Length: 391
Image 1 (tube, rainbow, N blue to C red):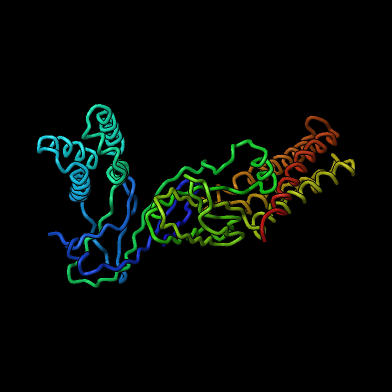
Image 2 (cartoon, rainbow, N blue to C red; image 1 turned 30 degrees about the horizontal axis):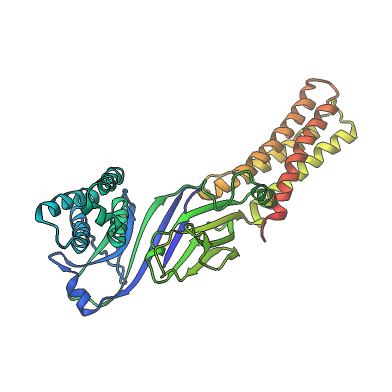
């Protein structure tokens, strides 16, 4: 089970819970001088932010260090190579072993170069060709070149059934989409119908290697999940039911067949109650005041009432959209709405200045009409957002 908490438009906090039972034979096979080492996940070769691993009792669980981790991965690759090449001599196996050792211990970029060298050798060397053509050996090389196995170190006399939980922070590409070009008709219609939605495509690498997978996507209280599902990008096809209009998406999939490229697709939208409806209300009120001023002909000799009303609307705007202490994802979702509300505030300010200072004309009806058009356009946009926002 995995919980993905959206911290911002490009960062997540992942919390993964793994429930497993070791047989007596498995516990014996996994015993090392450090303890019983259990492979619980595959993570990309990059620095983990705020990594934490704990057991069912909340106690910290150690993990293998980088060198020991790489040594176990090298042992697995070398064992696979020996199975494929049982008749190879020691010199040939020694050269292959050195390449495999570089593959698992190098950074992701350097490991890619080693893997390309192995592929190049496969064109001329029958031993390397046999390694690359073997499905198991090739899969291990491709996986361990850009990833590493997370090994938890458990006590030898511990319980056979364990529940381990690890968490870490991770960045992701917030611009990646599923199945649509940025300006395709379907995408443009969707943006019109849900102007403030934010789509996210979040990789779930643990899903492709689990018998079953359950992920929950947590978002701030001010937002809702319009739609969410798990998708296999290799097919592409849905691998879970679609969850719609919820505070917290809960997705379940049986992905035990094959190694899949599972991603969670999530669309967040602001809730109607709260900032969205208040922004629309302020925009409508300020626009109405501007048009009332236009229809009344204004009175440049006594501008104080109109100026006071408009500046009061601007003050309401400033207080409502103050973002101090606001969740980063909420700020990101509301960014476009704030820009439209800025248009309302500027229109109000232009009208107030034109009336109070008699600039550019002692009779600023035309200026107020222009400000009213700007404010009305913003009010329509914000009003549409409030109408389309889920309740």
